[in-house]
Amino acid sequence: MAVVLPGSFICLAHMHTGSMAVANTLRTIEGAFAAYNKRKGIGHHATLEEVKRVCGDKLTGAEKVFTVVRNPYDVLATMFVRNRNHYQVRSLEERVGRDPTFKEFLEVWLELNRRPYMEEGRLFYHDAKVHLRYERLQAEFDTLIRRLPNTPGSLLLEPESPGSPQDHWTSFYDDATYTYVNEHFKEDLVKFGYPFIWSNDRLA
Image 1: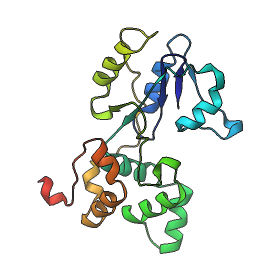
Image 2 (image 1 turned 30 degrees about the vertical axis):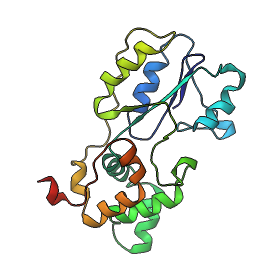
Image 3 (image 1 turned 90 degrees about the vertical axis):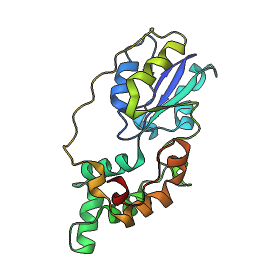
C-alpha cells in the first residue's frame, strides 16, 4: 500500500515487488501513515494522483515520491502463478477448454487490469523520483532513507511473507511469450535497465 510521511516521502506500491514489507516498515516511522481509502475506491496500489486526493492538505509538496520496481519478466510470471485460481483464469479455462497458457493469461490480464500509467504498456509508475530495484532492495532502501528528512538513519525491512512456491520465472517463457512481453512492457525494460530477452536459448 502507499505510505506517506508529510514533508518527507510518498511511497507508491506495485504488485509483487515487496511492497507490503516496505509499507509495514515505513509505517513504523513516527507520523507515517497508509494512504488508503476503500470507501473512495483507493486501494493498495494507488497512483500518485489518488494518494494526493486521500491526503489533501496534509502534503507539503516537498515529499520525495519513490517506488520499487522488479524485473518485469519475473513479476509477470509471479502474477501468473498467484492468480491461477482467480476468476479471470477460471473464465479463461472455460473459454479455451484447457489450462490457459502464460501468454493467454497475460492477454486477459492486461485487458482487464489496466491502470492509467499502463496505457502505454507499463507495469510501474515511471514518474516517481526514485525507483528502488527489488533485486537489491535493502541496500537501495538504506541509501534512500538516509537522505530523507524526519526518518531514522537506517531501517531493516520487514521480511516478505512467503508466497506460493514456483519454478524460476524463465520456465514459464517461450519465444512467443518473450516477444509479447517485450512489445507490451518495453518502456519498463528500457527505463529500468532490464535487458530484453527473446529466447531461453540465449540464457544458456
